[in-house]
Image 1: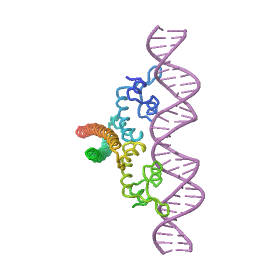
Image 2 (image 1 turned 90 degrees about the horizontal axis):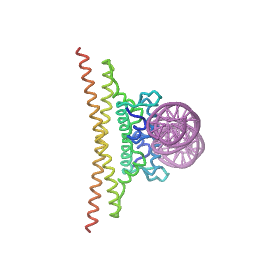
Image 3 (image 1 turned 30 degrees about the vertical axis):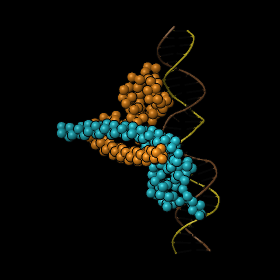
Image 4 (image 1 turned 120 degrees about the vertical axis):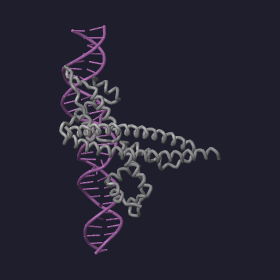
Length: 125
Length: 125
DNA sequence: CTTGAAGTTAACGTTAACGTAAATGGTAGT
DNA sequence: ACTACCATTTACGTTAACGTTAACTTCAAG
C-alpha cells in the first residue's frame, strides 16, 4: 500500500496529476479511515502503464481503454472475444510504431555516420 | 513542388496545421509570384519527419530540434561534433523507447494468450 | 473577364493535461 | 495538545496545438 506522495515521488509526477487520473477514472484507489487515498500494488502497476502510454503519445482517453483491458476479468465468452479483438488492434498499432521507430533509428544512425566521416576528413586535411 | 492543399490531403492534416508549423519555423516554404506557398521535396520529407515525431509524443519544440538536425550542413568541426553529440542523445532516447514498446508488446501478447486460453476452456466445458 | 475554388493574414476560440492557490481536515512525533 | 507536515476538495489559471471565422486576394476554367 502506497500513499499518494509516495507514488508521486517514485514516478516524479505531482500529486495533482495522480488525482487528475482518478478524475478520469484511470485509477480508483481505496480510502483510509480518514478519507485519504491508499494505492494498492495493482494501482501501482496501472500507473506505470499510464505513464508508459503517455510516452508514446497516447491520449489519456486511449490509455484508459488500454488500462481497462488489463484490469478486465471478463466472465462471458462474448465479452472475452471482444476484448481479444480490441487487444489485437492495439497490438497491431504498437507493432507499426516499433517498425517506424526502428526506421527512424536507422536514418539517424546513417546521418551520424555521415557526420563522423566529415569530421574525419576535416581533421586529416 | 507541392501546393499547401496537396500536402494537407496527402497527409490528412489541415492547411492550418501546415501553416502553424511554419509559424514555429518547422517549415519554410518558398513563395510564388502571387505570395502562395510552394513546398519542395525537402519540405515534404520534413513534414513526414514532423508527423512521425508527433506519433511518439515528442513536442513540436523537440521535433524542431530533430528536423534541424536533418537540415543542418555544419561547416565547422566544432559545430559538427556538437551535432553528433546531440544526435547520439536522441538516438539513445529512441532506442529506449523501442525497448519499452517491445516490452509492452510482450505483455499484451501474453495477456491475449491467457484470454484465448480462457475462451477455449469456456467452449470445451 | 467573370466566377468559384483555393490561397492569404489576423485574430479570437477550444481542448487536453495538468499547475496553482485557498480553505480545510488528518497524522505523527514530542 | 501542540506543531509541522501531509492530505482533501474546489475552482480558477495556463500552455501547446491546433480550429474557426472574417475579410480579403490569387488562380484556373470556361
